[in-house]
Image (spheres, rainbow, N blue to C red):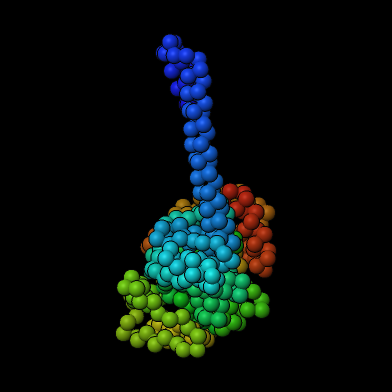
Length: 367
């Protein structure tokens, strides 16, 4: 277009130039324009092709945001090949995955139209439904650049730093396991954590696929692991060997019971204290804690005003609900909940309806 306009202006300004010369000039310029356009189109196609390759790999992996913040790492497609720049050729030949471990929190990211906001939260203590993943992701990179091995004890979380350490307690059987986070997920609505197959086996829910769990961050271990990772020192994931236990002297000031929504037994003598839990917190070790009866709820939202919580419940009339009172940062808070719900399947259905209704912050809890 610009080349043709240029010729038109040139012909109008140079009336004395012979028609033959004008036609020749036009032909030459048109050829140049065509060549340039072809070159640009080829470049665009090449770029689009590369983007499609990268997009294909990212979408086929468990973690869709793994490589967004890693400009130093290139992604090449040849089976499951994901390697650093200098090793691409050799890696393609050998069909290997090259690890690039790093400490990562990450920027907000979007998966399936849902936004997640990673943060370092040393008070994290939530209940919900756990799932697990295994061989289909074996040998692929985790979100912080390690290689996933389903035979090791590890887990994926949507927002907590990687690596960090959490205690996952199966509320259905009392088995409690300390797990190292190194991946993002699960991105299935209504799931709070995704454990490796080995972690699920130790918590005894591999066959059922899901379990009601409580997830608590272990602040002291997580901070120590953060310091090591920032110094490029990544502790080995657990197989049969366990990490040394954390001494009781290292217990942080953060209480593991500070933000729990789980009911506790009145007989405190039978309960395992937070200090004991931390003193015995070795990654991969299973301990037993008292089993407490729990119910499943869909929490629509939490409000500082009780009337707001009641108003939200009144908008959703398909399922009975109640307003539960608690504390958040020392202030009274009112949680609008639907339930109790008998099964996870029913909770998934109700949660899906509530999200469709417009309550984006709704999630499943166990209390």
